[in-house]
Image (cartoon, rainbow, N blue to C red; front, side, top):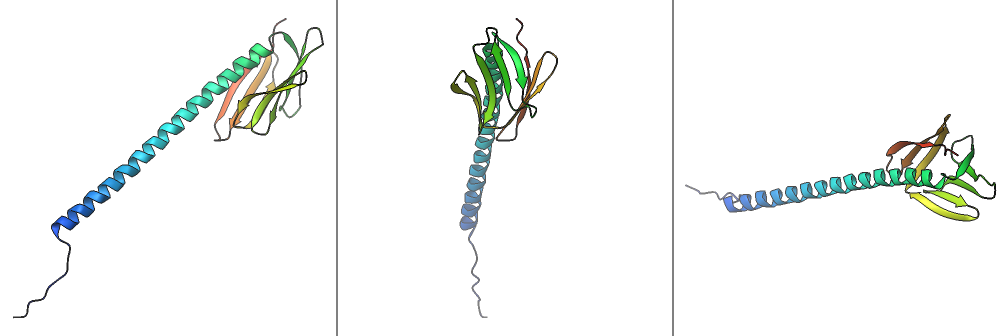
Length: 144
């Protein structure tokens, strides 16, 4: 009888390869979970930023009177009761800026688009961030 030797994997080699494959899958799963947590924190941060932005708008415009909104809805203008100061909110690149007299101040970052739709008593504010999340809010006109 002629004996033929077949080359094959031993049981230990097969187990080691399965363990390595399991470790690779586990590390991939951990990476995906961490990415999901980062996205969740980023989304929560943007919600907080948007609400802070609305509160700042309300606070900044409390002593001003509404003047106008550009027809495209990309800028809101207010003027002081005395008429000596004006305040504007408008998008600039990836920011929403405020101008008060001649100073420019960023209020909200990572913004893709900003729209202010005038209503009878205020503005509906729509902000879309760079990650395509859109938030809606309402800014009432200041009461004199």
